Amino acid sequence: DLRGGLVSLYQLNMTFGIFLGYCSVYGTRKYDNTAQWRVPLGLCFLWALIIIIGMLLVPESPRYLIECERHEEARASIAKINKVSPEDPWVLKQADEINAGVLAQRELGEASWKELFSVKTKVLQRLITGILVQTFLQLTGENYFFFYGTTIFKSVGLTDGFETSIVLGTVNFFSTIIAVMVVDKIGRRKCLLFGAAGMMACMVIFASIGVKCLYPHGRDGPSSKGAGNAMIVFTCFYIFCFATTWAPVAYIVVAESFPSKVKSRAMSISTACNWLWQFLIGFFTPFITGSIHFYYGYVFVGCLVAMFLYVFFFLPETIGLSLEEIQLLYEEGIKPWKSASWVPPSRRGISSEESKTEKKDWKKFLKFSKGSD
Image (tube, rainbow, N blue to C red; front, side):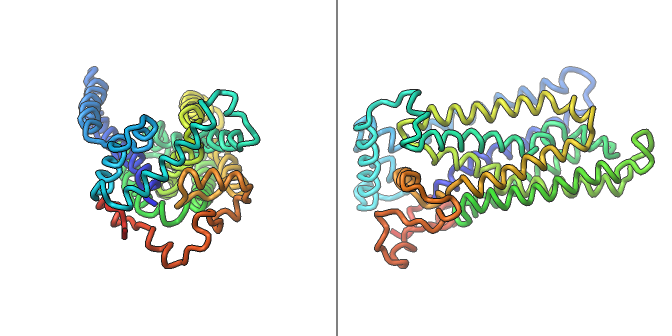
């Protein structure tokens, strides 16, 4: 299954852009005119141009092409993505499976907004999951560091918080590379559970040091350099835990949770909640930290506890499953904590050796091959 790795590339490129953003801001930090902010913003036009050119080279979605009755183009797209012949039996099999799913969706008719709230088809449950996962993504506290990292690190005694922001950007980028390689091996649930637990531990230590040790002589006195350095170290550990788990996996979970019929609308609502909470945290954080200082970290600890419990009790494992198989997983009502061992009806009876031949490791993914077929 390459779906997780491919979606993770989206997050990887975001982290690379964040890192470059930190570098451009660092390079213009000493300007005393409008160039200090005009140059970083102006560089964004370059990346927009690269995206435009790159999109011209991206193959069209096979599922979309089949929905438009362009079957030959769909097979060509599948073949191009996997670098095999359009006549390869594996390509024909994939096209037939997608076509069967599309036909099944057509029989149900055009999706309406009302269907998003259907309990019978389990769409409402998945919509709630999408909303909460995207909300929790912001409530991890990641943008507390990414938006206000420079200010935070100045408050712990650093003379140049811009340098530490570059360090965090570097950790964020290289940690996401690890996520791309392992996300389709470990599974969605394990990634989210380990990530929530790791971030929780780091945030507890970060907040506790900030509250108890950073200002040994009171907030009007000098800060402790050792405590400040420890806070930076645990911030890096926190970013590592976030970048290898929740950062990419939250988008993967939302992308593969919904039936094709309602996917665009459901994902729009879920993503809107992400941006809403991103705005709220970005807007209110300065006021909150000005009032309760590093006690703010404990707020995120509470959110991380809630995230861990929600994932364990309500989020099923979807690694290695097609969209059609995920639909069956929900319809059968499998308990989330037992879902990792669930086998789709179409695979019941396939030997373990045959099953292994269908799996693709990250090295083959990097070569964009179709695996062992």
